[in-house]
Length: 163
Image 1 (cartoon, rainbow, N blue to C red):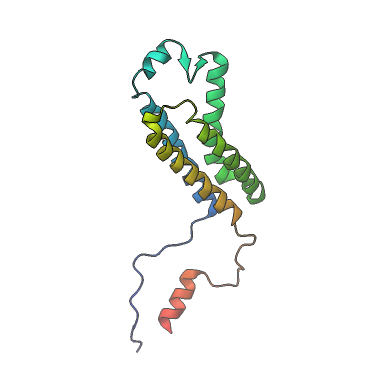
Image 2 (cartoon, rainbow, N blue to C red):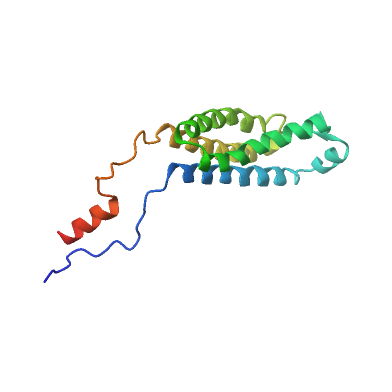
């Protein structure tokens, strides 16, 4: 008869694939970008400027709107690409895009008044932290998969519990 001396771990944390972490990070970034842009409209006079045909000192035009679309479409596509690209291409793509988006996010503070300095520091800081997480995740991406003969963490836990 075997006496169980160790209680089973009720909160198991199976490893999360790097691709899923990347897709989640890009999704979080997209939500932040959308909400930050939305909250920007609450600043006094912003809606009047947009009605007057100006955004960030730029005249609203088809070209400007296309540029805005591309700036938003790339991280949106990164959600899908992070889950579907082969590992080597995925790693390189995420390294390049996340690196290029750090200055894009910082540019959002251009022309901001000091009244909103804390708001921009906070929002840009969180966006940059997410991009740093993406960079760290792809930089530390495991080079090889575990061997088929190596026990998984669950198998190792079971073997320990039975011992």
